[in-house]
Image (cartoon, rainbow over all chains, first blue to last red; front, top):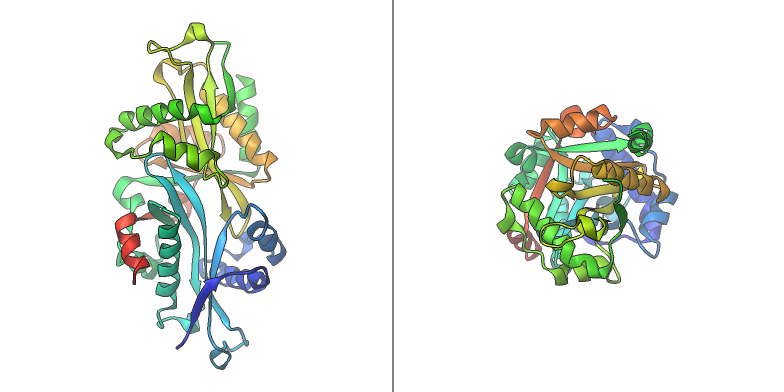
Length: 173
Length: 170
């Protein structure tokens, strides 16, 4: 199967939004998706974008059952390590199920790695759900280390009311 | 300690920021892993495309450290993106020199960070904590934080430069 990988443009946001929902469905968390394609356009294609995105396309003759030719995406942004400097975080990597097994996921990841190299990033990080064994294996075979298992790192989140309360908590002291 | 000032770091703070980064790394017994230089911090934090933002804490001259430093704490953060909820604030590092702890400096830094998060329309603040640091995990959980690794099963993965280069050249 022929495919091309390129940087996403504003017009790709509708397809990216569709695939974000498909990935959320796979992760059993669709009720958590609050971002629309318009917000993706605003956040990814403004003067100081919050993320960058790659999309994978197939020719028209290989389009999906519903007629889509944009069949995969990789969404990433730049982070910083106080030890190693510039780093990259791969937030989402997704290929529509009917287009798997053709090297598209590997192609997206390699292109992300190329961008990381061009931007002098020391490291690429990402998160995988513990029950998602195929994804854990996909990254492990490419040299990824599971830092939660290996070093015991846990991801912590403050949001909504807890974020507001944290800000108010210090005043009480 | 009544007097301390939390402010946005300036280019001339990079020397103190690197010193504090190394002190934190020393505490974590990983000092040799810090390969960052003052030049990197300057280019990466104060150039056209900042990769990070930093808060620093000043104390008055009369409270300076034994080596004469008045910058005694820092917090480094940047903005990330969750395609489900949008802009987030990610807290990368947060350190108060041991002799200046217990005066509410850490709590004030967290307050400034959470105010920054809300002001810059972030829906959430994320960071990582080592699982054996139960004291910190309990501290954050009491304040309403969620441990996404325990609660949702998220595992953090890292691919280092060597492996990245292999993939980039395929």
